[in-house]
Length: 156
Ligand SMILES: C[S@@+](CC[C@H](N)C(=O)[O-])C[C@H]1O[C@@H](n2cnc3c(N)ncnc32)[C@H](O)[C@@H]1O
Image 1: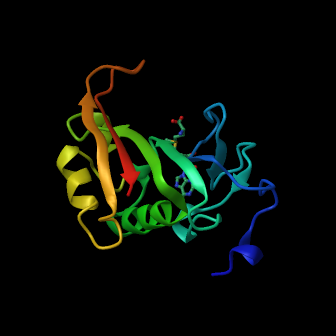
Image 2: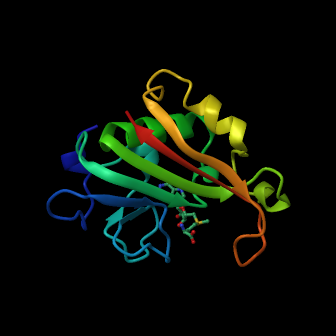
């Protein structure tokens, strides 16, 4: 694909330092947002088609309750893209429903996550340059009392 022809109408000028994937209506302060729905964020884009940013250009990429909407293959491709656009030493942090919580099985979730799954995900070629900085579950941390999985990876 050529990023130039597929860039959307609100691509930020200059380099992006902090990116939130699947930001929805609640984008984190200080982050450029990318979402396939137009929620007023900077980039309206389906990340399954890649991340429309240059190699090694981003310091930090986060998501909240988004990764579980991707299939196994899509997860691998999205994380390869995250790896590509991160700078060396850049970090990527994600939070999502833990497989132990019944809400992990919401009808449009395609993958189900626990700590072991993070370890196996970064064991594949193309993602083996990540190391795990943080990988744990939290119980009843958010307002809904949902058990969530948090993980943070560092590009080495
Ligand atoms: C459950 S919502 C979470 C929204 C927000 N991060 C939050 O925590 O409130 C999942 C978000 O991921 C977005 N999303 C799902 N698939 C996507 C894709 N392929 N590319 C970009 N965004 C996607 C959805 O449009 C939605 O805004």
